[in-house]
Amino acid sequence: MQRSAMLNTIKRQMAFQKARPAVQPACDVFINHRGVDTKRSIASLLYHQLVFSRIPSFLDNKNMKPGDKLFEHIDNAILGCKIGVAVFSPRYCESYFCLHELALMMETGKKVIPIFCDVKPSQLRVSDNRLCSQSEAKRFGYALEEAKNTVGLAFDTTKGNWADVVTYATELVKENLIEVDNKKHPARHTRILY
Image (cartoon, rainbow, N blue to C red):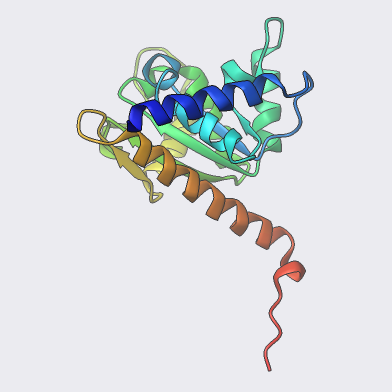
């Protein structure tokens, strides 16, 4: 029953996404992930749950079309977002794109919510496979250390409940968006004390 309800929710979310205009507005949330590990699972499920919750979100295969310049489009989405969600997976650090996106989020002071999916924070390190220059490796290493030292979610796909982790992650995103908005506009949330 739970799986059927989840599939119906995803179908409604996909219909909502198709009804959106072709020009994408700025996103509130940027989802950073390793496509081969998580695009068909937690990244897409989280994206659809956020969109269903009316939170503009960026997921590369949902917000980009053929002909878009990868770095330009992705970098602009990161620069325009309020928070990032980094979905770490066993092969995450093998991707130059993942590490570049994470580094850009950290360098621009974005609040990042890490989700450690089938990987422990201690297992994350920049691999020495000529993926990047020495200066980029330092940049990426710093970003990984920042993420590893940030409280996040741990999810084991063999034991965990997908609906629970996506629901909880969505709630965390909502809470963090409120926090970021309150910092930007403190006068809106001033309490009068008697």
